[in-house]
Image (tube, rainbow, N blue to C red; front, side, top):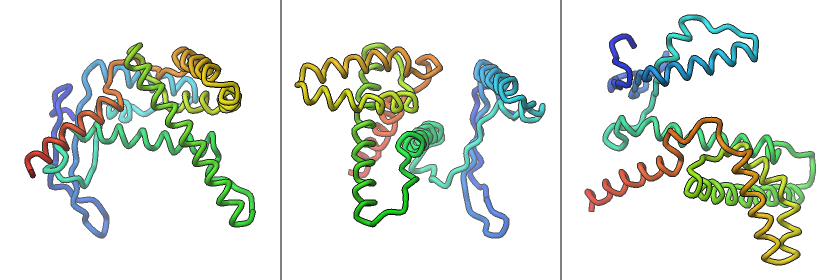
Length: 221
């Protein structure tokens, strides 16, 4: 860490993981900038105060770096895209968390197979509607207001609007549009991420991945 300048990245291409079976891997080490490190230390200080814990000085010092270990080849995924891919993977983890927290998809009583299938199918339909609405609202909010939506907060609020969706559908398209507009304003006010729109969003990252994949496909062609 001391050998790296703030913002610098280095890669150890020949690394091996495992006590018994040595698996080849890439290790990417990135030293955060001074501003990024200060922000992370502030977040740690908040956790210390909130949870009544004290981080060791070593942990505070190591908060100034990010370390990634992957078996993705450098030929397929350049070093500069590793962080973006891990960010996307974290988005997947958040979505799975909402499935368990809000939809309780991991819990079910002892019931017949047919009833379980109906229950699971209904939950998946609910998740699909909720996720589709969330991603569309997220894109609109980013395009129109330059604000980024929190997946966790927004899915919780959208799920609570299900009854209003149903009533809006029963009463016609105009009523449904009013419900969606109310939801959009609610998400804009209460569903945003805590940080400002500074970092790459999911759409930015997917654009980066898409452009790189597209360029590779052109080379192959």
